[in-house]
Length: 113
Length: 115
Image (tube, helix red, strand yellow):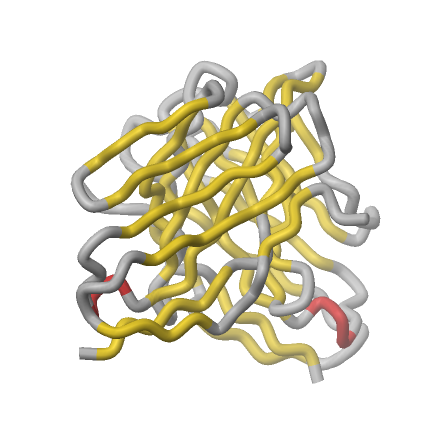
C-alpha cells in the first residue's frame, strides 16, 4: 500500500464550479500537509500547507485536514480555466535528520470555459 | 529574484550510460532536494542536501548519487542507466531544511529519456 493515495482523475468541470480534490494516507506520523499545483512542463508550486487538523483558507482555495480519518482535501471555489493543472498532495513526517516528503500521484483538473 | 534553474531541460541517453543533472537553487537558499516524477509513481524523494551534506536519502539504488557544492548548487548522477530511469527529475530548494520550513520551490525539471 502506498503511503499517500490520490485519485488521478482526470477531472473536468465547467467554469465557476466548486472542485474537491482528495488524498488519503496511512502513516499517522505525518504532521505537515501540503497542496501543490503543477502546470504542464513546469515544476510544482506550493499552494497551501497546514500543520493540524481543520480548515485553512486562502482566497478561492480551502485546505482541509482530518487526521482521525487520515484524509485531506483541497476545495477550489469559482474555478477558472487558469486553474487547469495537475494538483499534488504532499505530506511530511519527521525522521532522524529532518522531514521526509511523500507525494500523491496527482489529480489532473480541466476547467472548461 | 531568479527561481530554481535546472540544466539540461531535456536529455536522451541509452541504457548503460551515465548522466549528470545540475540544479542551481534560489539565491540564498541552502537546502536542495531531488525528486523523480513518473506517471505511475508520482514524485518520489531521492535525497536532500544542506551545507554540502546529504541529510536525507530516499529508497533508491546506489546508482543514484548526488552532491552539493559550497555555493549550494547541486548535481545528481545516475550511473548504468536503465529504461525505468526515464522520468522528470525535479530539484527543489528551500531557505533552510525541514522541519524549519516546508516551503520548497521547484525548478522546471530535467526530462530524461533512456532508450
